[in-house]
Image 1 (cartoon, rainbow, N blue to C red):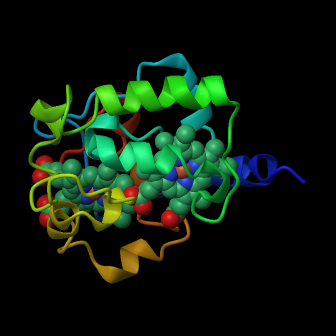
Image 2: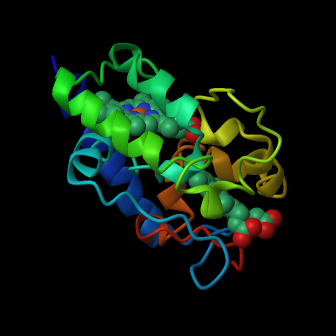
Length: 167
Ligand code: HEC
Ligand code: HEC
C-alpha cells in the first residue's frame, strides 16, 4: 500500500481540527518571524503532501542534501521520487537554504548549528527548542497537534510563512 494515501488524510484532518480547536498557545500571525514559503511547484507538491512544505530557509543546505539522498527512509516513510524530480527539489532546497540564499530568514533559527552539519529536524534545532520552551508539555500531545512537526496546528499562517509568537 502506498503510505502517502494513508498519511495524507490523517494530517489534513489534524490540521483542520487545529484551526477550529482554539489551542491555548496558538501562535498568531502579524509581524516578526517570516520564512518565505516554498514557491517551487515540484517541492510544494511533493514535500507538502504529508506535512507543511517546510521553508527551505529553516535548514542548512547540507541537511537538505542528506535528506534528499535518503527519501526512501524518510522518518519511517518511503517518500522517494524519480531521479529528475529529486535532483530538481534538491537544487531548490539547497539554493534557498538557511545558510544560502535564505540566510536573511534562517540565520537566527540556525544559530548554534555547526558549519557543515546536517540536522534532519527543524524541531531539534537549538533555537527551535529554545523558542518553544514555554509551550506547555500537554499542548504537544493534544490530538489536534499530534507532533511538534505539525507547525500549522499552532502557527495558523505557517503556509504563508509566518511563525510569530504574539499569541
Ligand atoms: C509520505 C509522506 C511524506 C512525504 C511525501 C514527505 N515527508 Fe517529510 N516527513 C514525513 C514524516 C512522517 C515526518 C515525521 C513527522 C513527525 O515527526 O511528526 C517528516 C518529517 C520531515 C521533516 C522534519 C520535521 C521536524 O520534525 O522538524 C522535514 C524537514 C521534512 N519531513 C522534509 C520533507 C521534504 C523536503 C519532503 C519532500 C522531498 C518531504 N518531507 C516529503 C513524511 C513525509
Ligand atoms: C503546540 C503548538 C506549536 C507547534 C506545533 C509549533 N509551534 Fe512554533 N511556537 C509556538 C508558540 C506558542 C510560540 C511562541 C513561544 C513563546 O513566545 O514563548 C512559538 C514560536 C515559534 C517561533 C519563534 C517566533 C518568534 O516570534 O519568536 C518559530 C520560528 C516557530 N515557533 C516555528 C515553528 C515551526 C517551524 C514549527 C513546526 C516545525 C512549530 N513552530 C511548531 C507554538 C507551536
